[in-house]
Image 1 (cartoon, one colour):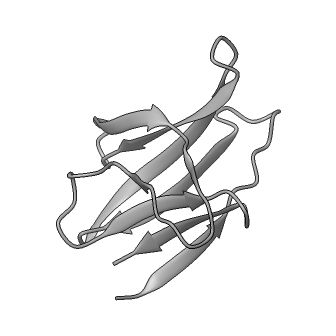
Image 2 (cartoon, one colour; image 1 turned 90 degrees about the horizontal axis):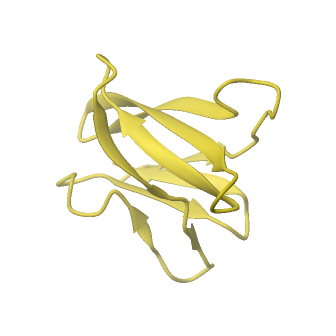
Length: 93
């Protein structure tokens, strides 16, 4: 299994503030992260190439040594998580 690190570096003047392409189970998805002012936290979503929402939820950071997967149960062989201590998304496939 290969793990790719993607630095989470939001740009508050861009819309959305953070967006990147990730490959999960061999399919490309758009990972979009936006700030929710009411919740005072970042929220992440995955969209397929046609723009259909696949998953959306709060951006929960995994501490070092423990994995909290984003989009649990959706992918069979790939994982996606946000490592709060390093500021990176980790995509394993």
